[in-house]
Image (cartoon, rainbow, N blue to C red; front, side):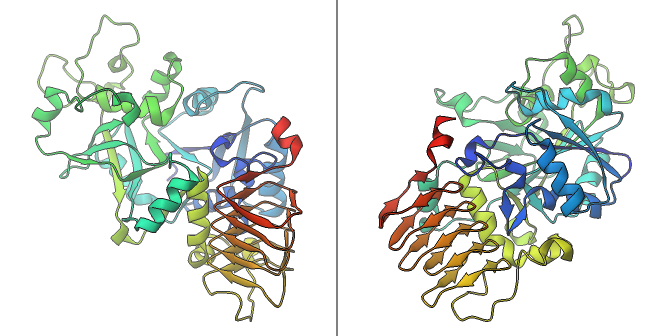
Length: 429
């Protein structure tokens, strides 16, 4: 894998994870009681990468590096790059910010990805097709009606692409579009050349973009000159996909074909394949491969419910020793994770949940995430909810599809649904 450089994007502000990421860097939010960035860093280290370019917000840099170097003790060399302070920039902007550090084909991956995919499968597809970009995607398993209703209450899932078109024989990515771009259209437009070259196309609306890409180096040069492109997923990838079927314009400044490396160039007047090639590797539910992102409340909750059976395989023992301890209690289901130092009351019941370190639980917790140092008193019922670090839930609090911010104290019993609770300073900010 030494032919590729790696860029890990951990500079997102976590706006879709409100209020979880208000006071905690998104990359350090726990999945299975371990900061999410640990999963992708360990994945890259196990794949034998020697170094990685890590892009972060300046306000998060110190905390993230302290965890990676002092707590997790990763051996992979980390080239930390802070984004410009006070500037709201997209993923493509972040990539431009590190362009001078990239000298070969490169991988871009988000810090919120959790996967056990054999990376060589993606790399081989990129090499075989001499691709401009190769994307990792995952076909979602069919959801039950209950799951659909719960997801609707938690908010729209931003990880699902609206329209993904694939050639079933070659896995070439021929269509990648957001529904919002065609909200007023009665049909989905398609280029004649695309249909001529790919008479059979499978169009999906249930595929997760893993935000794991391998790019040819020339794409970065093109991106550096086209500063209007701000997002990789929403702008750069759709543009590359469309350019596979566009007519080159040598007179147009910045035409994408002028950036293609010599070995990929072609006769623009001949009817031959475009040098811009977009491919995808799509995992199927039957493949038993984990591909999940924690980029929304719904997705964050889902991966925490899934992670117990994967934790030991995805992380080294030094990171899981106090994150998941054995509890010999009939009140804790086998599908749950309980951190070190947890006190369980007589009336406690925990099912399909993750409980952080040093918590005191005397209520019922189902399908929920409870972070470190949380106190949940008797007669509380927590369902499909997330309770952040150091929060307190007094006796008789009943939560369904709620998020409780860091250090928030719920002092009055009552029943609450579909609400966020944060301390006043978080709201003011």
